[in-house]
Amino acid sequence: MSHTIQNKSKLLALVRRLKGQVEAIENALLAEKPCDEVLNLTASVRGALSGLTAELIEDHVRCHIVAPELGAAERQQGAEELIDVIRSYLK
Image (cartoon, rainbow, N blue to C red; front, side, top):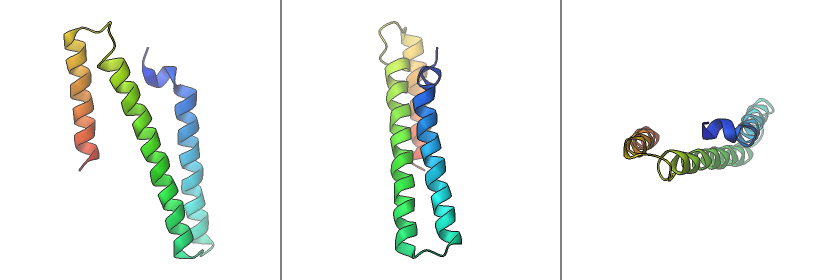
């Protein structure tokens, strides 16, 4: 079973938090709030997104790379998937 399914409720809570934070940015812009307030809200979104990304990466490493029950081919595939994601993340 995939780690995204096993941790579905935790991941969805993080996504919903992000959604609320993005809506707060939209509301601040609509209300013409000062730029420092909008910048603080965007910093919060970035932090929350980084937290979600870190959670997903950690779970991927644990479930698809270092899990003792995996064979070499499965570990290699898990590593390649992670490398691809990190490359696209760093672009």
